[in-house]
Length: 308
Image (cartoon, rainbow, N blue to C red):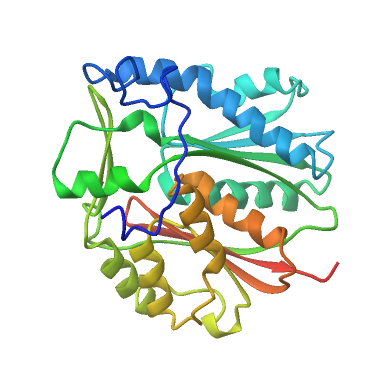
């Protein structure tokens, strides 16, 4: 399964000082950690990883004058939340308005960007900092069944940040869309347990996505008019299903496949990595961002990358 996954590297905040979380003395080197132990790691590591993502963003664009902060994460819970911690750690104005997009899974980046877009459309002077941070490696399970193993082979840790404003440059966020696909709620689940969060990822997911794209999900613009595809890299079979259902060119999902290969599935952060690759390329034109997650649900938005 690992050889067929399309993933060459995944990353984790865990090493336990041993170089491997599964080695003796590592996080998973003894008895399986409780949810409380996993959340203790999340409380420290998630805000730190998020600040590194913001620092990387600050190397590219000015992030002064932030008025709103939108944070997405589904791999942990703390209160005060990551959003509040980031206000302090980043030295943001304490009056910054905060929104936490919690436990929505892989499509949460779309929800976060969509929310930021709505804010800027209603307040043109707003400068919205969007952060997605996920520590999926905290939730490995003592389960050798094929379905859980498949899920555990996909996921890694990651964080990404973006600035959304009415200013020039970057990509222009367009029309959002969403769809909860009927009769699919058992296909992707993220269940809280005594030993972390257990991911249930059915082998039927790629087929259900392909079927939904062929019928239930109506894209706001025709697929043939899209120049740039930013599809959540949820797995090789999911990307294959999207490409097949929409009859895309063989290289249409190259950015998504590159992110999957280098990082694995980082849940909400993954799509942000794909968009970052598009921003770092010479590609221009009409774009479509698309992600899938628990529901089974699809979230997306159009975007445009103009000549600069």
